[in-house]
Length: 275
Image 1 (cartoon, rainbow, N blue to C red):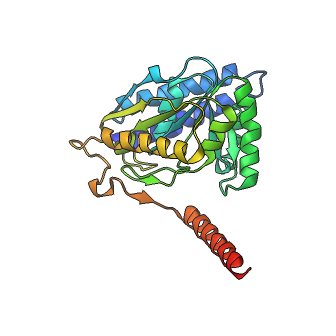
Image 2: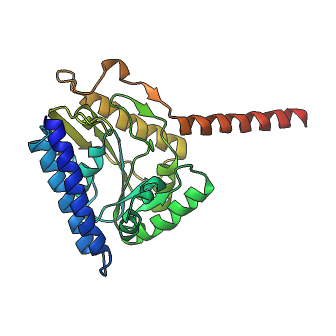
Image 3: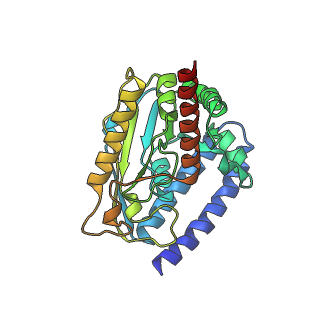
């Protein structure tokens, strides 16, 4: 019953605030629209706690630099992750796939937010588009949120970390703050069923500029995944299947890209041998 009530609340509230944000998107500046978005996310976090029984605790704000651009690289287990994250900051930008632009008026809202919208298929075009938009965000000295796995991960599991976060790290030349969470135990991915109980979102020690790609990616993944597993509530499992802990997932798109990359590398090796 609590899940049903919360889902109704989620749909109705989202619809109402979407209309408000569309109206504000036609006005000069971003202030009113971003204030409305922050208010929306705080109302949703209230609904998570009061209606669904999900009590989220956020810690580690001291690890987020107060001035200048900052990249926030977060674990992504739940639709609720973004709601909680946006409730913590004003005028937060973020990286998202172009699938969101198919929703009515959302493309306009994303543009007003200076969201970094990239092609889900990746590649050089996605890299160039991300660099172009992120340049604007960097000049504004704003924080930018990215989910380095590129996908919602079933609680306890992970996807392969994508290199886009490293390109932002190089382009921005600023700290990257990893974020761990166990919110997926209470609201797993986009599941209808919600599981009452405590959840945590934690900002971790920032990674400072200057690391090479391999070292940066290894440090980022280790910090996020190690701490996210440590946060798992083994006394109130919720949506967690303990057998999933530490398992790496690969969706169809990622699998096709990996196989294509491996085939290309194999062809190159064969070419080198023949010559």
